[in-house]
Length: 366
Image 1 (cartoon, helix red, strand yellow):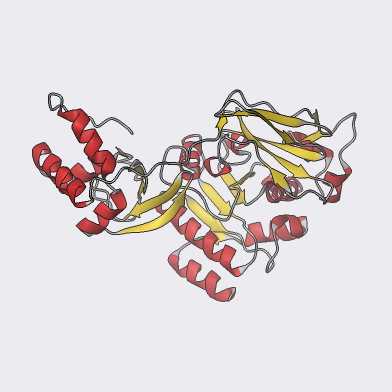
Image 2: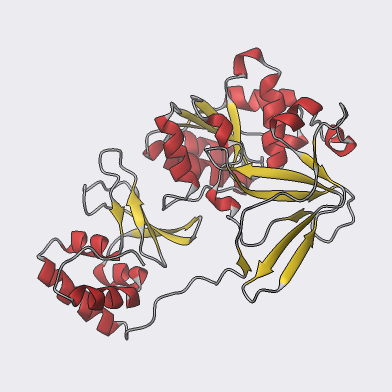
C-alpha cells in the first residue's frame, strides 16, 4: 500500500496498518458520502460526487474500492488520493482528530484484513511475441484478413503478424514451465502510448479452436490500454471502437475519405472505458489531451444496451472537458459488420453529446 505521509515518531507504521484494515466503501457508506459504483482497469471503482480538496460536485473523483487509491479529474485539481488523504481531507479537522477517527472506524470494522488482489500466477519477464511473420508477407496478405476487408496496407499499419507454429512460453510462480499454442493465429500486438509492446492477442483463423482469442498470461489487462493509442499522439480527434477488428474497419472507412484521414481510430476492448487510476483508459485519454486531443467520437455497436453505454461514457468524457460525440450504427451491427459508407455516415451524423441529445438518442433506439 502507498505510504501514509504523516510524522508521528514511530506511529506511522501503526497508522498504515490501521488504514490497511479499512474498507473504503464501507467508510463512505458510514459517512454518507455520495458515490457510484463503476469499473476500472484494476477492478471496482467508486465514482465520488464531491472532491474533498477542490469541492467540485460533478462526480470527477474515482477511488479504487480495494486499494483506496484514486484521482480527481478536475483540470485545476488533479489531486492523487490514498485512503489517508481522502479520509483526512473529507473530515477537514486536525491530523490528530483524523487519526483517532481512522482508529475508531477500524475497530468498528473488526480489524478485518485488507482485500487482496488475486496473485499473478506467472513470473513476468520481457514480453516476446510468439514466432510469427509480419503481414503482408512476401507482398501477400492473409486471406482471412482480406475476407474481413483488412487489406495489406491496414495489416501493416496495425503491425499484424501470422503465427503458423508459434508458442508463448512462461513460468508459473512455482517455477513450472508452461506454454500456450498460438498456431494458426493472427498475432495482434498491443502497445502503450509510448509505442512499447505491453500485450498481444492471438486470433484463431481456422474457426475450430476452443478459444477464438488467446492472451499472454500475467501481462497487462487490455482494460489498461487504448488499442492504437500510440498512433493518436498529436491527433485532435479520435474515434473509439470496441474490438481490434472494429478499429480496423473504422480505419478503412476513414482512410477512404480525404477529409477524415487525420482522425485516428482507437479501441477500448469493450463497451466501457476504465476509469479511476493512472493506468486507466480515461487517464490515457487525458494524456492524449496534453498532445492536442479535443474531440472523441464513440462508435460501438448499434444495439440498445451498447448505445446506453456509449451515451453514459460520452457524458463522462464531456464532464472532464472533451467534446464527446456518439455515432449511431445500424441496429445490432458492429463497425466491421457494415460497409465503410455506413461507418462514415454514422461518423458524420454524430453530434456533440448533451443531456438533451442523450435522452433523444436513447428514446430513438428503444
